[in-house]
Image (cartoon, rainbow, N blue to C red; front, side, top):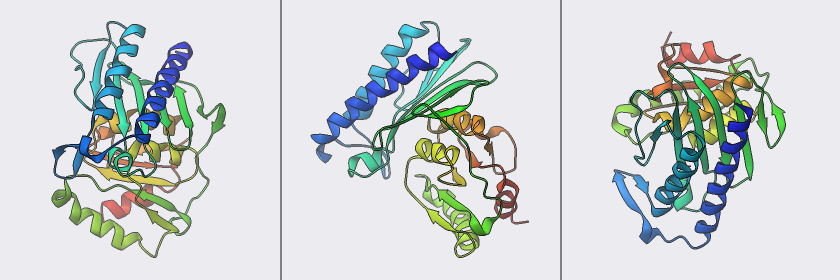
Length: 259
């Protein structure tokens, strides 16, 4: 698995270099709208094409779940889960962070994860049974164990009307009662920031599996915890994702469930 992870890192770095160069000449006229306030560009599509082509060389029989529609998983033993450009809105506005996310899973579990955060030139990676790394250095979640000291990242998904009641209640409860709340707009990168101890938790709904697959494994192998909003394991779909250092997880579940 280490060899596959190393190959995945190189593919993520190559895609990141392409994205970085395209940002230098990017024009907003290249933007397409998928849904309300949800955008895609030729950069997302070309990045995905390059990543998928390279990954097919590694495991020709593997399936794909990718944000811009490449492939699908049916009965394959392995499946790549790819976000070719997480944080597209940030990219469009020349704002950080944005990243490439690549994960491999089988029918039961995640096997490896790579996230390359392009703006800071940071590559996070891990594989089943291994520590999590940032540019070759082992990372761990923070030791914060109270909400009063917690630095929390939140996400605002595109399904605003469905999410807004929950978001407003969560922010109202936390604002002034935690160390800080931040909205930065790239789920994969933010989960890695939790893994590295920069944030203590990150929460959002209505994501896709490509947004969180690699980040989940990186966070878990760094000592963190990921669940859905009920404390269960349906988070792999991206529908509800609470990611934390593990030490404040139950506190946040209590807020979410309004207990």
